[in-house]
Amino acid sequence: QVQLLESGGGSVQTGGSLRLSCEVSGFTAARYYVGWFRQAPGKEREWVATIYTGGRSTHYADNVKDRFAISEDNAQKIIYLQMNSLKPEDTGMYYCAASVAGGVFVYINSSSYNYWGQGTQVTVSS
Image (cartoon, rainbow, N blue to C red; front, side):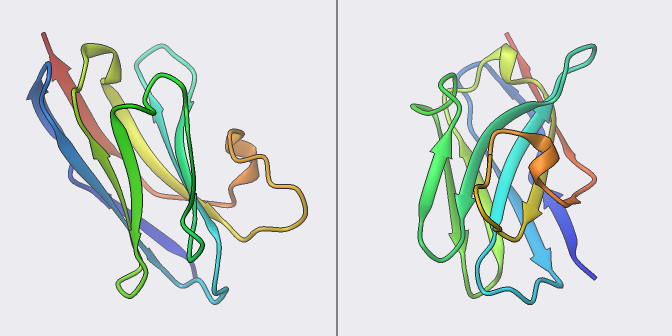
């Protein structure tokens, strides 16, 4: 049974930093995609970043690519999202999601991911 557990959210002021963690368990595949999404109140879920584990292939949304970094601790099966220079518009519930790759993987689409965590709240105040 695949489980994803996010942690690391909190409240920071503009310009601050947070590091989110996503603990992945139950995956038997050696490599898989893990993505971070976020959702602000009243808005649609938004893709933030994705990593293909083991190969260090990473992808970022344009509005975070110079501020956020996704990485993995392969031994611990933890995916991190380091968030720097946070802005109020980064506020939202952050979710990690995972899926085994099969064919063309559209990493920006939430429907591409089979497994989701419960989320961790990030609040950035001005």
